[in-house]
Image (cartoon, rainbow, N blue to C red):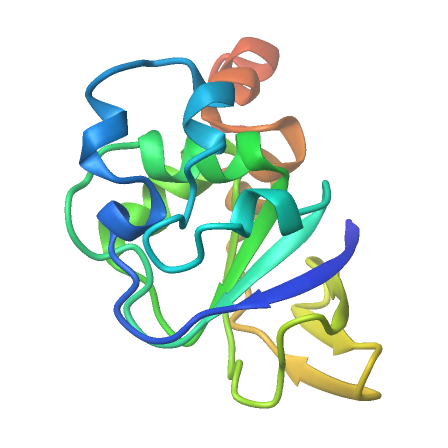
Length: 166
C-alpha cells in the first residue's frame, strides 16, 4: 500500500478542537460540511489547499483533547489520507484507524509544508520526494494495516466478520 500526496505541516499539541471546532461538530453529522472547517482555527484557508490524498504532518501529541471520532472522519472527508506525527494521543490514534485514516509515528522534523510525500505502509517508510530523503516510521501491526486497506473497522468487519489471523 503506497500513498502519495502533499504535506501540510503543523506543530505540537494539535487538539481535536483545532482539527474540527466544537462549534461545528455539535451542529451536524454531515462529514462533508464538517470537512469545510477542518483546521480553520489554525489555517482558515486549509480546506481550499487540500487535494485528495494529502497528508497532515505534525509534531508531538497530535489529536489530544476530546475523543470524538468527528476529528479523523472530518479529516478524511476533507481529502486528507493520513497524518504523520512524532506522537499521537492514544484515543485519536485508535479512532483514526477505526475510521480508515492512516496514522504513522515518525520523525517529521525534516518535512516541510508543500513537500511531495510517498508513504509505503508495508515498509514503514516515508519518502520526501521534494527533499530526496527517507524517514522510517513506527510499523503498524498487520491487522491495523488490513483495517486501513478495507477503509476502516466497519468495512473490515462487514467483509471478514472478525479479526482474521490474529
